[in-house]
Length: 361
Image (cartoon, rainbow, N blue to C red):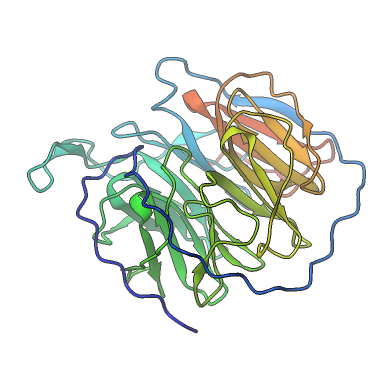
């Protein structure tokens, strides 16, 4: 497998929510043509009931927002916040969420002579692996992991300072992280990290762009690009300046990416080529996931959309106008996180995922 060159450590001043202006993109290689994967057949979708788990807090909704929700078995972890307003919550019954601690101190400290920053930063992503390991990413290059379901944490220091947004694993078992200022990190074991150079333009960090594994490789929303195990390239059909935020794949290989101003693009060959589709909205779309037999999309002004095929969309009443940022699903339902610590629960009538679960405190 070809390995891209290591990336030099960024010395630019980090910013939790603002990135540098992207450079003009270089010429991009063409993706190889492949046979399309099967497309899902249309079928009636089960209705999703929407309930409020955590209410909207209007005191400071822009800083105290939910940036990610992850569910593994009967454990849900919620992260968010900006600067010193960390959000880290956990639930074992799907209904009662308790605050968790990452580090003991939240006192500010000096960093290389620059302004003070909190030792506990805002969080951007919680990711739970099947072996039970929990990873956290956040502002100022924060990377931490836990092997005891979040009781204790080990903080790693990958020598980067920009905000880190998302983490996933490729087909070869390597871990990848995407962050602000075009930062990409890679590790063979989760302990040794190197920066990887990506010679593509990157988008601003407004939506905490997602990084997800799709059939064709790893899709980086920050670059609107794929890593196929040998190279980074922009799939056919995606505009050079497209601003994407979320990406998801259906069980049969349809890939849907969404972004600013209602943009949506669909691929039926695993993510190598896309075509624009009409979402029916003009609001910013922030995340997408496969939930209860359909793509679930969330965004600004309480927007929730569903699509069985990634081509046509229907609205789901959310009964909120809050900005919705993140989805964490469990197959037959999902949590949706938003501004002001808002947390919604969406589930089908026959959902039994949390049946028998108890609140472990």
